[in-house]
Image (cartoon, rainbow, N blue to C red; front, side):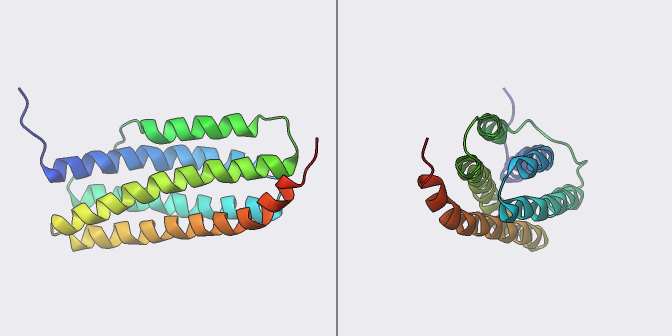
Length: 166
């Protein structure tokens, strides 16, 4: 029987999961931007792509702070969320309705990340790793801001989508 995981080992498992998550989002965000009809939504995805690339860099820094090589474990959660989002991108529908669906998919991804980074922040605090907690906090705040931006766009776009008639 294997030894039980320590909190630090669980922390590093979560970092590996997020490392895969962010890399998958780097591939998904350009597709979402290309498909989005609303210029504001396209721009939101493009700016978040640059942030996501920085999130990968921060995760690599965290690996180094723990003396670990940066590597990923398959993030099953984001894999499923991205698959749902790709279904929306393929829908034959009005652009306003598609954009509303794209925002919904993107917010699912943001909420997944917010939950994951929030957990990492709490664990880093408990582990006494203020240096790591601070890096995680930067990313967590960026994810929350991205979610708020999507909510703002949705508040304007959803009303238009609701008025589209077949």
